[in-house]
Image (cartoon, rainbow, N blue to C red; front, side):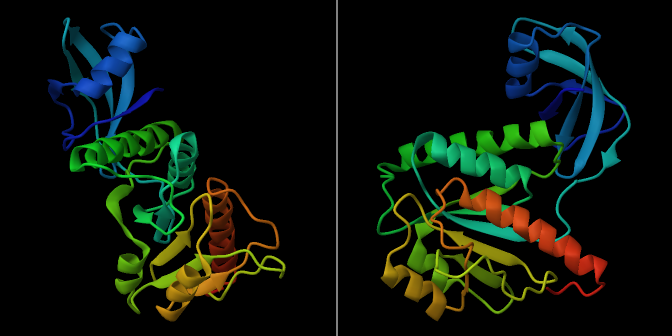
Length: 249
């Protein structure tokens, strides 16, 4: 059944107006008709809905019972992602969402090729990124949309590190793939550079601020591939630690 994000709190067994985005996608693009059904989700809850009335500019739906389920990872991971250009960034955000990133902090670095420009342009870019992760949630079954945090510099991000989270810095090295010891009961922050990678100075800054270097092996991964590999490995490591009953890898 098709799934759509609803921007407001869902109420069970009630009638309400479909959001403009869902109306456009479901009714205008997919040509839905009265009587068709879908699932709406918001903030960890979902409900089946039926189209009961369609006009030229809006649609009314009737909801069913609410189900409270997130399908999120059992651990919290924030992606500190240096911004890249075009489809590469969209792909990274999409796959990070599908693989369970809880939050995505946009970062700027020395080799970042993205130019923010005006506040209006930055807001427009963030709005686009938000739609990318919403679409990923609609596709993957997630009911919690990862928060996209406005861009800050890598130094500002490092200055925000605390002992209440574990920071992991993805960095190529000559060693084989190696995952540091991780306590999954603490939030994780995974730092990933953009197309040109992080400079030596920036890597030192991250490490001096408390991050632990994490090697994915001697190959240099593309900026859109690294989040996929990192998050998939963390999921595997988490389930392995749970099978051992420790919560620590």
